[in-house]
Image (tube, rainbow, N blue to C red):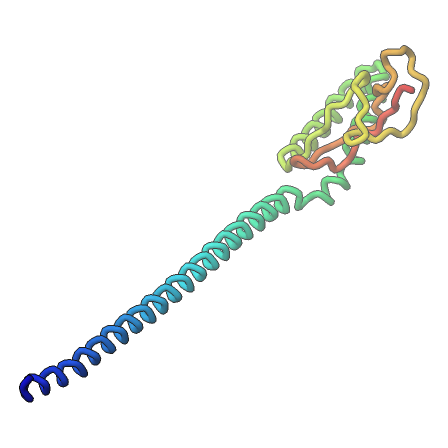
Length: 186
């Protein structure tokens, strides 16, 4: 070979080696860039997941506190209403005693007491107070009734059932604020 061709071949070899090195370096840089990009994508995914979980937790917190607040408002006057229950009981007892007397003047008195009693009951009803419906013959349930005594049942079918209701029970919203006091057949 001639010297020119040898010089050209010698020059081409380092150029080719340089090109290969540059290509390998470019590939490494691309891999590094991809791995960096993948890392960033993974971190971004983690942050998005973290954000979504935090957002969902906050929404649950808002919903829970809002529900608790509504419950608080529903039962805010509980102490006052509980204090008024003996007054309702007194009205019921007074009406029962007045009903025993058969006199014209007493009947007029009874009408007045009934009006006041009904007005009080309606006012308390607007505040969420409801009497519990319990009557003799209902099945006794320890979660809904308070047994103050047990007596022998007048008949076999009255065993485990309510014989008499001594004191009415009341609910405020969906919560029982006073359990009905009952006598249970044994």
